[in-house]
Length: 124
Image 1 (spheres, rainbow, N blue to C red):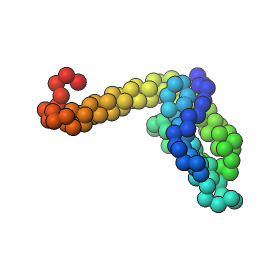
Image 2 (cartoon, helix red, strand yellow):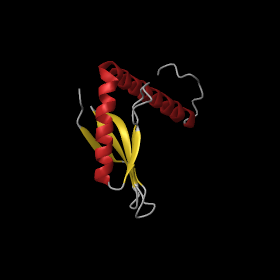
Image 3 (cartoon, rainbow, N blue to C red):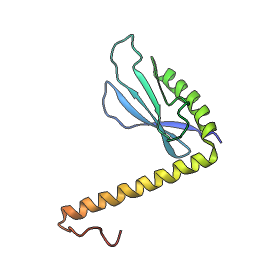
Image 4 (cartoon, helix red, strand yellow):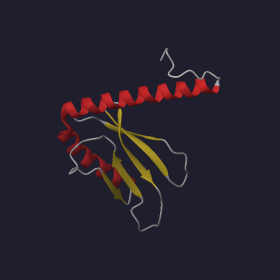
């Protein structure tokens, strides 16, 4: 199943920028713009989904944003098909587990700042 892709800017740099790329409600990649030289390929993209197949394209560069988007979309179409539904389900589960761990450690930090040094917190 192919997911509709959309981008959300996450950087505030007026001369460059970073965007997260979403597909199926999950972050599946990133795109960045870091102007180096007018004749260089200043737009980069990366697929951030983990897969065991190292033969698949995961990153590229282009001269324009449109070119980078087209490169990402072409690579993602191949990557997503190779990933399959089981691979996608593993990616979603891994993201949920990562988000849970981040929330846990953020709460531990908040408690430590309040002086609660008990570890591990019993109620998390």
